[in-house]
Length: 173
Image (cartoon, rainbow, N blue to C red; front, side, top):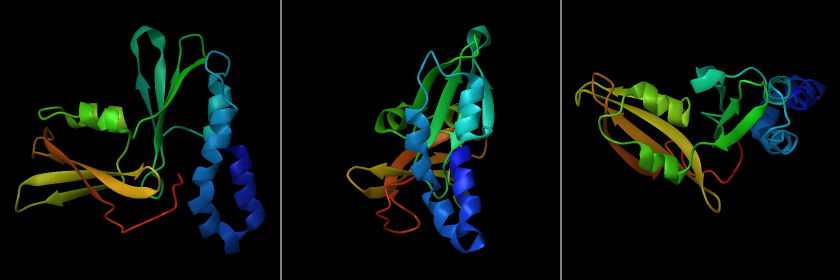
């Protein structure tokens, strides 16, 4: 991540927007530089920056949440074991994880599974709140995974639809 930030600084303000949109391109390089069981917590933070959130795990492990929403199409969960070494690195916006979101689940369970959404929209007339995650459907279509919550933030239903921001062929983030 540091090398990506250095790239942004070198571009100056003129290239800031373009570089920010392309920052997700740094993720594959950062991932390639981290090996499970070898990379340390410091290595993870150096390449990805400070996490959005830290989730405690059993036995003293912790999972770092790295969100690329709303402009990116991926979210990462990186687990650091009690020994301070990276034990897992997962991109969590996947069909398997989407299928695991079930009616009745609480909002924190969903957030822990998928990371922070791209947007949260209340629908007062329906008495619902929709959370949306943007993701890449291979080979290059952006889609939205929507979770509809009740007023007490329990999952009512899920749906996959078009990207709310329109078609996008970036495949980044």
